[in-house]
Image 1 (cartoon, rainbow, N blue to C red):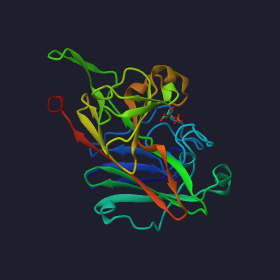
Image 2: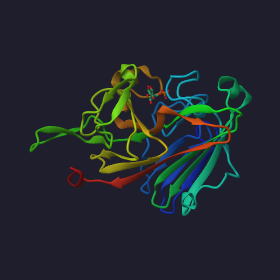
Image 3: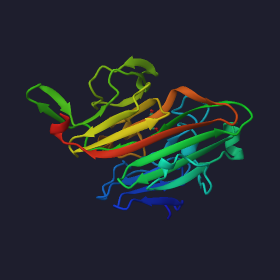
Image 4: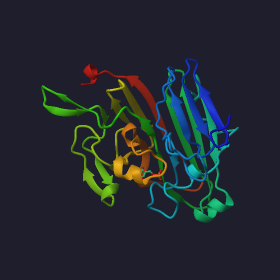
Length: 306
Ligand code: BG6
């Protein structure tokens, strides 16, 4: 089918009715719905579905650069390019396709791209949807250059949440309990983009949201969870080859300054990205790197989690 922009997109469906949409623009997942038809990723109502920028939402792919530290455009070129369907991908482990609905996409640099980033690569992305609704993204990057190159990578995942500001007060502890929280990043070091990438150590029990957040958590565990008590939903994020986790929410002031997000929409989203940023990946000629992200939604209740 076509996406909003007339660009080809692929729709994956599970037997129980979950679905995923992937656009050839950026290889970007633009929608992920559970078997009740509920959207699990955030997309802004003001999103601009027009190349050459990634639309605000879903899962844009940041490669070969994250942010603006480097010679390329913000978050690199991959999210702004038109990818192709890879008809003949090199095989992955059988478990990556067994019982799943999937598509393989491919990005190779054009002559124009090589002028900006003079390294020949093949970026393969498999997006798969399991029968139970689990979403998996597997990226493989191969150096087909004569020389080594280094890159950063992130799955810039916009999760849809109830309202990051919701707080309940639990009488016994007399402490505010934020209903949307990230678990698994406590005690880690992070680079704070709001403080010139200075390094800090996380002090909280869980990550909660009371103002703008723009951080790269370093050397994180391979499983983290985003809890949303209001919606009784937990996103379980499992990653491989991606040591860092970006957490971003623009909050009120920054949202107002951005054209493609509504003034109030920051309340309904957080970006939690599996990423490789602090220590760029280096590939020698002929070498390949793989980075995999799996997201699953499990029901949660206040009592069982609290
Ligand atoms: C985050 C960055 O991951 O992405 C932020 O850390 C940035 O600094 C945000 O503002 C969104 O980037 P963009 O280019 O999609 O507007």
